[in-house]
Structure formats: C-alpha cells, structure tokens
Image 1 (cartoon, rainbow, N blue to C red):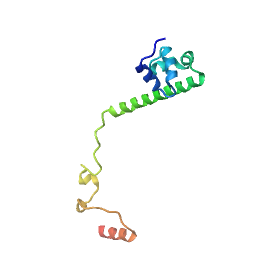
Image 2: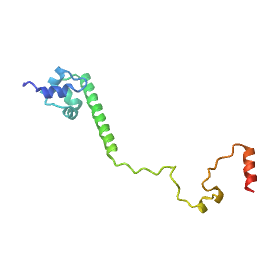
Image 3: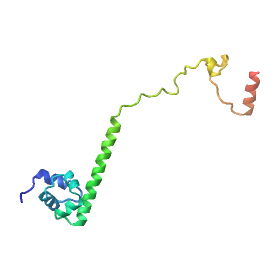
Image 4: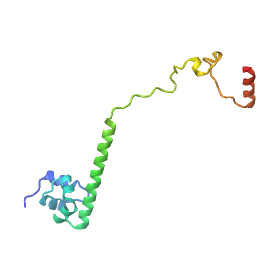
Length: 129
C-alpha cells in the first residue's frame, strides 16, 4: 500500500469527523476528495473499513457541506441577476392635469392638510361656500 499524498490527506482530513487514520483508510479505498466520499456513500465508507457510527457521521457531514455549497451557488445566481430599474419615487411630480386631479384652481400649488378636528372641518366647509 503506497502512502497517500499530502494533498489527498489534506482534502480528506478537511471533512468533519475524518482524522489521519480514517483518511488513510479512505485513501487506501481509492477516495481522494469529498466528491469521492459522496459517491461512495455509506456502503463505500463501511467497505473501506470504517465503523458504522463513524461512517454515518462522515456521510452526514459531507451531505451537509454539499447542501451548503448548493445554497451558496443559488445565492450567487440570485445576486448575478440583473437588477430591475428603480421605480420612480412617490415624491416625483405627477403628470396628471388639474382637471383630472380634482383640485380647484385656487388650490393648485398649495399644501392641503387634513382637518384637525370638527371645528376646523366646519370652518373649511364654510369657507368653501
């Protein structure tokens, strides 16, 4: 059995739950990366001489890291989509004519506020007559 390269050992020990001894077993079984471990699955890990409990932990760790990588890719894809042009702000001037807006001629350009009470409302009604 040839000694696995440092690159392979580093790649395998980067997997949570895999130490030097487990990495040697995986390398001896022909696995050299996370993707090889994913392809092997639980049966392949057991066949490599790893106990059932450790194999389950490694399979779970590799599956969760694969899911995280997929979510990162989807976030990047969402960010790379072209942004829609900004909608005009509400404060922008309206292009509605005076006739369409329902504003009287003497009210154009004046600020209209809501009545503060009943007395204020009655004053406004009297002024309009």
